[in-house]
Length: 165
Image 1 (cartoon, rainbow, N blue to C red):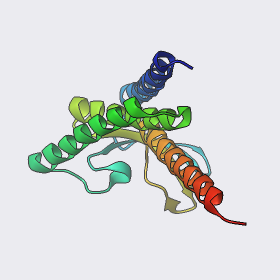
Image 2 (spheres, rainbow, N blue to C red):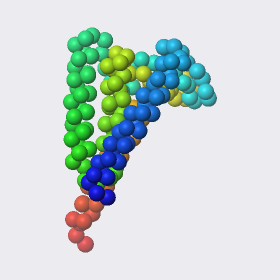
Image 3 (tube, helix red, strand yellow):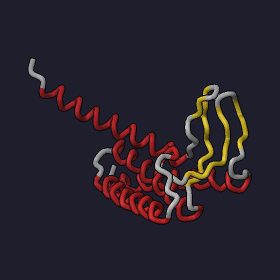
Image 4 (tube, rainbow, N blue to C red):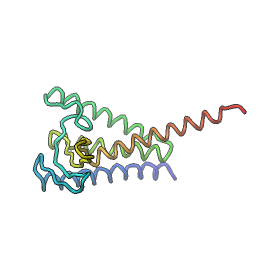
């Protein structure tokens, strides 16, 4: 795969993540009211939550200074992810960074447009609820898991090659 195709397919992943993330959030904001819960199964609800914090509602930013710091952090992270994506040498590595970058951009768009991130997927077992999340959050988690798996595989392969028999 040429470098151009490699980068264009990574850009396509970012674009697809952004498209589906924003599409699902538009559908939620236009068809549900904040706080509304629609039970779909004994373990899944469709909800409309506004997350003012980091992933899964951690560290909520209610003041203008906290919002400024959070948005600044996300913008810095976006530049770092773009650099990592640009310098990636393996497809899985690039796809992982593309998933994370697409998710970060999707949530950043929400912060600018809504002042918070739209979350709508809620899983639970009986009375134990996982915090609501969205497509962008899912892509970020999958991308991070893939990077850890890829780096662990790289380290494992190197350490196995250094073992003397």
